[in-house]
Amino acid sequence: MSDVRATGARKWLGYLGVVVVFAVVCGFLAHWQWSRHEEKMVVVHQLLEQRYDAAPVPLDEAVPALDSYDPALEWQPVSMTGTYAADETLLVRNRPLNGQPGFEVLVPFRVTGGDVFVVDRGWVPTGNDQDAPDEVPAPPEGEVTVTARLKPGEPALGSRTGVPGTNQIATVQLSEVQARVSGTIYSASYGLLQSETPAPAEAPVKASAPEIDTGLNLSYFVQWIMFAVGAFAFLFYVFRQERRNRALDEEGADGDEARVREAERARRRAARPLADNDAEDELLDAAGH
Image (cartoon, rainbow, N blue to C red):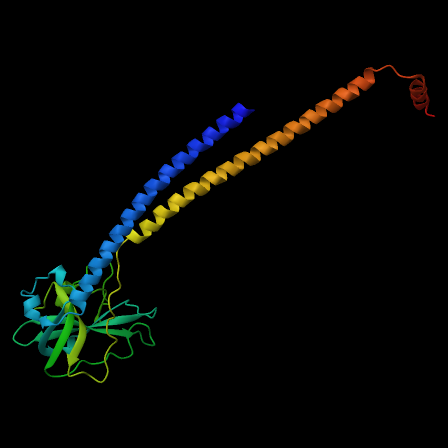
């Protein structure tokens, strides 16, 4: 029995060793994912501090050519002076805000002495008919000084397109915007409105600060921790199941042994010679008395 127990103990110690090694590996991978997450957080915060809240620079300084765009300048505020082409306003469909459906309002801005820069003036909710806003606040008339944050143009969304015969488009795909407005536009970037002077009495809801997205590193970190904990939980479950099955086997063996002992006692009683009174009782039972 002691040899069996020793063998079982060695087996479970081996299993425990494998689980510990697996958990250590998971710990290293979780630490690596967390380090990557923190590195990206630092980069994103630096980007927002250096760009989002930076002082505005002239548009032609940040974007020297119509088709140029530097990804490092995303969110950089740029300033320009010119006039809005309000009659060429476009609405970008399916842009929810706080769970409410709505549209982004794009207005071409004719830069003084230059070309057209597309300005996203903000968000408006859907109207009563759900297909268009009830009202789109008009931009200021005449010469306006605009400050907007740079964003790259958006790609096409599969087969989604705008609504024919309307001023609605599916995404800020600048090639489609170019086909709908007059003049040559900046084809690689557009701007999210920060401010405009003079300021109108009413305006769309301005875009909020960007959400920090560091990718999947944080979720991978959680997954590796769960794998490590799950390995110990699985080992404990298997250990309990084996003990339970062994207890049931031992209980069944004890029952079989008891039945064997009882059968042996009955056999011995049957083989033992009967006393006179026992024989007499059997004869009376057989006669029905």
